[in-house]
Every structure is written in C-alpha cells, then in structure tokens.
Image (cartoon, rainbow, N blue to C red; front, side, top):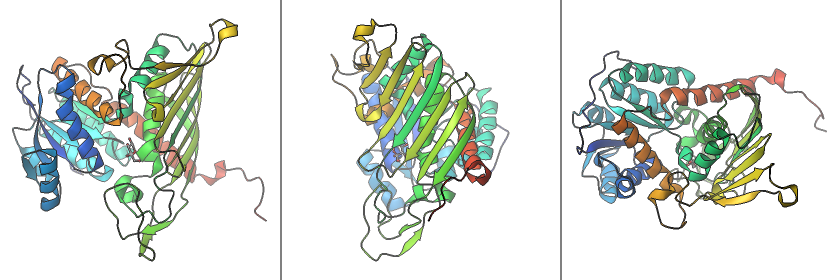
Length: 407
Ligand code: SOE
C-alpha cells in the first residue's frame, strides 16, 4: 500500500460541465454502478450530468466486451492510468476489497473524488489509511463516499426519519438479519467472495457490513462492543466453473479448493445510546434470496424492514388506540417519502438497481452543494471497526461457554 501526502486539486465543478467518471471493475457492482450513473440524470436534476468516460478491467478482451455492452467508449487495463488522467473527476471503485486501499489512496493523491464499494477495506489498518488520506484530500475539496447502497432504500430512509422524529422513543432493541442462500449448494464453485485474501471476510464483510451500517445509521447509535461467532459450513468448493457471478453449480468430480472465509456470522452488540443488538448474516438460508432485515423496538414504537419487500415499511405506534393497535404496512412509494418523488407517479414502486441510482444522485448532489457526503470514508471506518471486533471476538474461545458435550 502506498501513501502519498501530496494532494492535487480536484477538477472544478463549474455548472453544466459533465462529471467524468472512471469505473474500476465490470462485474456485478461495476454493472450496477454504470447503470446508476447513466440513469440518475434521467430522474434527478443534476447540474453536472455524469459521463462514463472509462471502464477499467485487467483483461483487455473481457473489458472491451463489457464496455461495448455498457456503452462506454474507452477502456484501460491498468487502474493507475485511469487515476492519472486529468480528464477524470470521479474514480468509482467496484473491485474486490483487497484492491480498495491502493486504488483509493492513489486516486485521492491525484485529486479525484472517490466512490468506493463496501466494505471500505479488508482491514482496519487499510480503512484508517484511507480515512486519513480522505481527511487530507478534503482540505483540497476532494470528497469520498462508501457504497452502503441500502441506505438509499426509501423505506430504510423513512425508518431513519421516524427515529429522528422521535416516533420510536428510546431505542431498546436493534435486530438485524441479512439472509441469502446462493452458497447453500456445496458444489457452487469458489469465487473471490470466498477467498480471505481478496474479500477480507465472508458473509461478515459482504452482507453483515450492510446490516452494521444500516443499524448504526438508522438507530443513530454506534456499536460499543460485540460478542460473536463465525462459522464455515463448506470448507472446500469446486475450482472449475469459478466465475465472477454468484451461485451456479460445478460438474461432479471437479477439483476443489479451500474456502477461507466465514459462511455465516452471528453476534450480539451493545450500542452507545443504551440499545442492545442481535445480528445474523448467512448465505446458507435456503429460500431467502436477499432478506436484508432490520427491526428496531423503542419505548414508543417499532419499525421492521425486509428488503424482499423493499417498497414497504412495517411501523407500530404504541400510542395508537389499544383496540386498533398493530403493525401497519406503509407503502413507501409516495411523493412524501424519501427519493420516491423523482420516480413513477402514484406509488408504482422501485427495485434493487434504483438504490444505486439514488447513491449517484446523492454523490452528485454532495459534490455540487459541497456538503458532507454520507457515508464518507470516516463513517465507513466505523463499520470496519465493528467487523474487526466481530472477528476478534469470534477467535476468542474463552468467550464460548460449553454446555452439552457431543456423545
Ligand atoms: C452478494 O452477497 C451481494 O451481491 C453483496 O455483495 C451486495 O453487497 C449485496 O447488496 C447483495 O449481495
């Protein structure tokens, strides 16, 4: 990891001038981000229409094919050239976690604004270096963002608004689950998300990071300590057929390689505002495709969210007439709700890709108004510290109290 202390001036964001973006990576997240940069100006008023200037990938042929499909004219096979180019304003990092720090540090030193996929890095040390570089660059007008995209779900943003309005009262419980099932089959091939060197951790960094960010953001409280367990159900997986995608099944008898990350994570937590929390993340919950859930119980009410019903928020108000009490399902699709006034009329609802569109709209709005981007690297570091604490706690066998012995 290299760290430069000199920061170049960012390109001026004078009105009307396009914001030129380099996308680093063209797998799942590269495609999601490209879709968002292209779509955002069609629904949100942006003075600086984004321009997808460059797609970066290591393999020239595959990057060219992806660029043609995504309608990006230029490609590069080395991210360093993208970072050096004077005509690039934003470097959008959509690569595995082990590359985030190096690319972000170089981009910040070159005076580029940086949007970096989550989790911010693979370790607290890397995340701290990135945050320190971001603080230095901020003085020169350079901004950083971390892609915790679920913050841009209208229903979760509404939940946060309800907490801020005091509708939940004093928060007591935070309950977060992130359940997927795309690794349930032991013959699903290895991919980079199962390699500690590339991904940092498994379900923990990939999906529980979203839960930690959402829990801290919606509740307005920070996690002060955790007690954790990590588990790997399938220790080896087929190498054959290993692709960029998620899921799939290799042919019988294919040679296998080691899984070096957790398949599931579970932990309890204390929050600085007095709440207690329970977190669970897995990619082995058969039937749960993308159940990113958050429930918060306060002295005056509760909210419950499940991304599989992303256009709704469950809300319970303990001040309702007792005879009529119960969770109500709010269709978070009206013009009064976060983000939704920019979309389809009278409540037609949104989908997964739209979160990334909101992310771009927020990034561009923050750059145009020079307001603090949320979450920036410093805020993403607060998630990284929790991930680190979970790993440290899970390794501490003394915290595990034996009960029954296996017969
Ligand atoms: C895979 O588990 C994954 O694509 C995550 O990497 C994303 O962050 C999450 O939004 C959906 O699931």
